[in-house]
Image 1 (cartoon, rainbow, N blue to C red):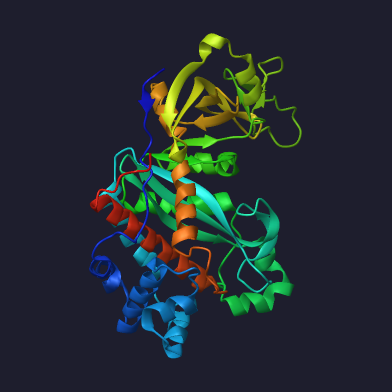
Image 2: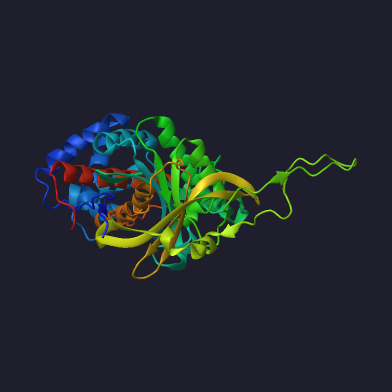
Length: 419
């Protein structure tokens, strides 16, 4: 059996046994307090964080407000206005949060994780809601879809940023005009796909210079988007993303030629493949054709599942871009020795990247799913009842901060990871 390759420790996120929670939260809140313009906003933010951290069965605004401030209907209404309509810039809080993540988790080989998380909703009036595939339910349902970026290093993991996916009809269909107004959608908001939202957030992190990072990991919903992969490479980052088994690559770079101009019409502007050259193959086909000696067995610790043994292979291939050869990349294959489940990844890391690095990166995406699990089970991530654009982003921002507060406390009190 090979040596165990570690990814990152799974943290036991719990607020019940953190001593001096009130004092610690007050000190944590003081980091962000100067970013609010008014005293009432600062106080409301502290109340909301307290509510998210409180042991409540449901963490919508009313039970949180009542638990923190007592039976005070005016306080509950003020908290609702603070989240849904408050004129405070949560983007400033997010950027300060990145600096705090750098202090506790930052590493030169830090990994940015990209993933979506969906939120089932009743009715049709919540911003961006639509009947669409809902990952939380595993089927099509009425829900809102969020795109998130997280961070993971050998020290731990955290959420970094969030964007609400707004379906195209919400922005262009006249039938949504009144709903757009009621939800406060920005007048200049344009449709962006989920990979485009992810690219926007990744670029913001890199351009802020607030947080060291080198890698981006994602599932095939994002890894199957060539524009996102090229965008990640353009930021100077290395992607390690899962792709569908039907993804095509070349085992060797095919030759191109420029078709001759025949004297009429426009001169050819786009090269074409030379006839008779090598054909692009599916990554599944390439994996199936590998001899047994091409696979190397490794043991990796991934999430709460404990050590997992798999066979790995990595080979250099040429990616496909618009039916033509694109960048030289790694095709990384991971096959579970018991279930035979095959995962296929593309990676643009340098040619001298060792196999052990690929093995480790194949196990670096689970923390973002754990962040969602902890956020929804412990911190009311999906319990919000606000309907507005502003309210959704304000809520998610404070959930991200509450989550990192518990991460920070877990690190400082040296809680042991789950075994």
